[in-house]
Image (cartoon, rainbow, N blue to C red; front, top):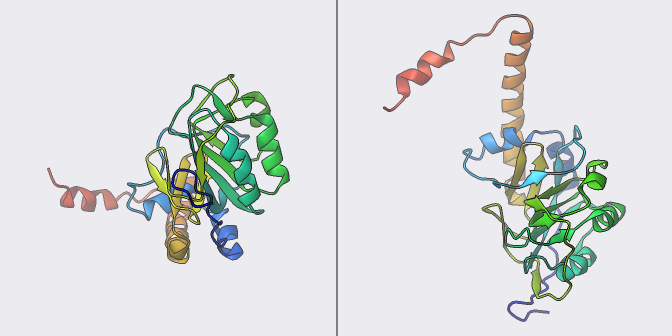
Length: 223
């Protein structure tokens, strides 16, 4: 279906599995630091049980009216194992878009996670599972199922634009999205930084910490 305002576009090719596996072992902060620290979502929080793994997968996107989940339900048919379902409900938290049943079903289908700029419910149940669920807020009031909405179109999640087919990652610090074509370079940069940070942590654990770099930072500071 291609009618404007009700588009349902095919899902984009999935990112390479080797890259997704690498991203699952990298903190979102490491990736963010190598994207100039000015991108990523704001105001979207994790509600699932913390895990040592970073959520990572290819974005299947939904734009829907606040408080309505008809297109969210249909979008599950566009998701493959390893995808992340990304739902733009305009930040509306008056009615929950998903709850315990839909998130459990998404996990059963093999999704890597769900991200909503909207509300969820059944939080106590969701917190018992490691299946990643990110949302703007919580409401006990259930969803309408009237539409309209669009599938696999550009969306905005907490101020972060997500294109269908982007890689989206998330951990307890937040969410970040970027084109799959940038993944290899970003992973390499993050691994280099991870090594540098581990060296500092090793020094601290040994009771020493070289802070000479601070003088260089002060020298270049613009007042």
